[in-house]
Image (cartoon, rainbow, N blue to C red; front, side):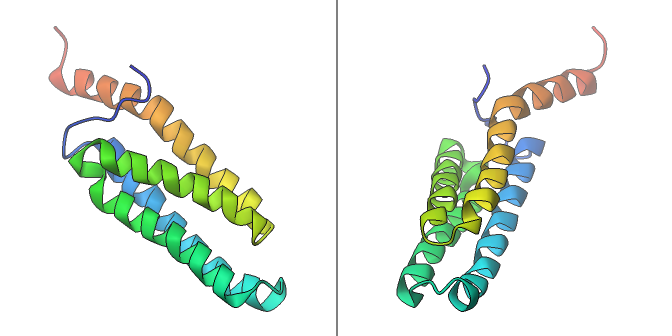
Amino acid sequence: MPGRCSERSDGAMNRVASSVLVLEAVMVALVVPVALNLAGVNTMLGLVSAGLVVLLCIAGAATVRRGRIGYVLGSAAQVGAVGMGFVVSMMFVLGAIFAAMWFVLLRYGPEVERRGEERAEGPG
């Protein structure tokens, strides 16, 4: 079923999901200084919004191997990243890029992982 998370703790989908979330956390953390200096964003608003998204990304990356909760946190991070566009306009684009990667991962990842497992089992 598309969108279902693999329960295997060593699944490739879990590693890719963790990588996407960690890279997104780094990107959001790097956007904050730019936003504060160039876009004239309120310092507290910028730090709080970015901090929440970074925490969601890190929590999601840390828990994707434990089941659904990591994917729920990762999805919340995508909403938060796109929502940061109301604070820093460039985040509409950057957040949308990461949200698209997350959607593709959730949509096609389980199918790719299942096919890889079938190939590993061999013919028969």
